[in-house]
Image 1 (cartoon, rainbow, N blue to C red):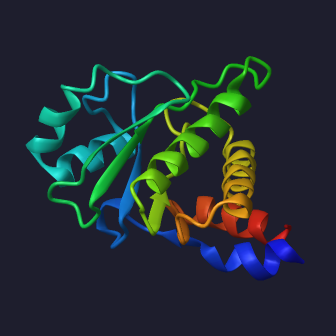
Image 2: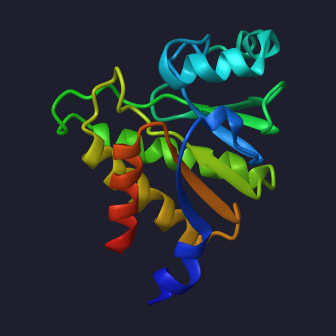
Length: 176
């Protein structure tokens, strides 16, 4: 009951382009170099402009399961939280813990900066091969656990580019 009445109103699911969202921070599913790539990473770098790449060059990369923060530059978001999800092997090689850490690290950085709204893409489900339903379960559980013990951020958005992904998140949230 506590989860439904206190936490679920703070979580939403949208289908669309994360680079267009009017939130305080967006999360970038980055690679370890932080220097851009394909998928959401490339889209964020293109939308933010060359200043983002210039700042990322000063960060000395990022390890899997960790996160680093930059300005949003030309994005509506003030911050970009770059996190490196795990490459999926078999689900028994530490992937769930590393993926959970991505969400916790981003939420921690957001809270430290008094971010009120944050949007996450589907981390590791593209070229990193994490099964979508399993990644969704880790993502939702990690976010709900964080929100149960923290007031910040006030709202968390799961921004899914594909409608099927958005449906997975809605279904998972309806089961808690």
